[in-house]
Length: 533
Image (tube, rainbow, N blue to C red; front, top):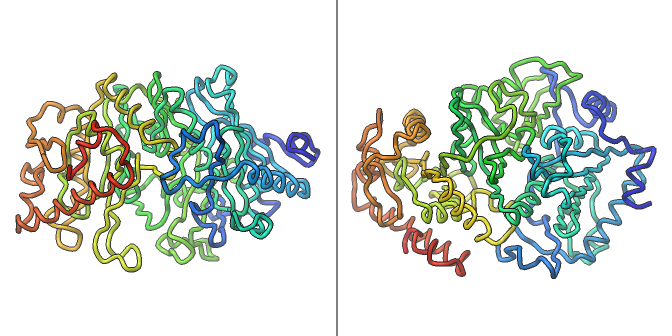
């Protein structure tokens, strides 16, 4: 039996309504119900997060020039190996008593929504996709990505035998064939794998159409102005984008087209570890603060510690520090109904600089924006991993490196083109340390960060006087309403100015070294803006 025959099989349940999916999840005991009426599930190690070592892109002669094969996440797979794995997956699915198929799209803007057909033996996977992917619009045939319609087979508990394939793969396989619009997930029950595979596909497809994919949050003011915020884990992206005065468009994946900003997702997939109800009240309310109608709720809690009495310990990371919650955007109290906004008037790059040498806020011109977008800098803190005793500089290109498979200039050139055309203001906002590095200085007060962000979004920082930082290549405002101007220049907050200079030069050299290693072929427009150059 081939894939098409599986879809028409009497064992395949296609496009079930949410209530029916929930019944299947409970019937097959794929998850338990929490006291709040949400689902909770646990995945066994090593399937508690993404597995970059087991993630592949099929390498075709026609398209291989589009992929940055020098970037560590992009591992090539031969088409013949993918075909053998696809055949194994289809044969395994034919042995299952019940299969679940769903048709969804990636993207709230129907003009470039990507159709995706998912087939799996696990109804919880389908429920997750129902949360994260969007219903098919009526005019889907008009989408410029309609001919890219993607098929994804997911067998979460089907382990691959490496011997069968001469150890070219391990027992888990996550593979994407961009040319033939097919994907495979074998042996990974981590729900996020489904989401991230499809967004990697979207991030590959859209630049060819002049659409810039962004790993970011986006929100919209009451006056309609749109802002996007990019930042790696620990920089405060989720906290700062949740603004009661601004409607959330989305918190993770967006596209910037000629129509403006559009959310790729239908839901949120938020981290739960060390969740603070005061800092993240919406997430806490959705997961743990209110009782749901179990026939309608599709909130899924993954890998969090729940005791037999139903109480949670969100600080327990013995299974994994990557506990998660999935829920539709409709669970939020303040969100954009269309999940779309106009062209962004403001872009904010977040960094948590643990060296304590970057200013709390800086302005970037278009070329500088290309550089900071490319580098995706933040710090890994001492104590977060065994053997890490000093802050470690971390670079993830475009603030989402593992999911941006194309050559870097495909993304940087698009960013430059759009911010110039739309006259978008771009800022670097540092949520890290001041007065010294981590362990000596202090974390920049969240109240100060919020005031700076308010000034950014209101446009009040646009015309303030600035000084040029020739080491890091950006402009630093000399004043900001309601913020002590002394802290705007980081050297002012260090007692020992010589130590500041040494630390700042160290970080600049790390930028220069990383750039030369990863992007030796990029043109001088970006190179000359790199710190240390």
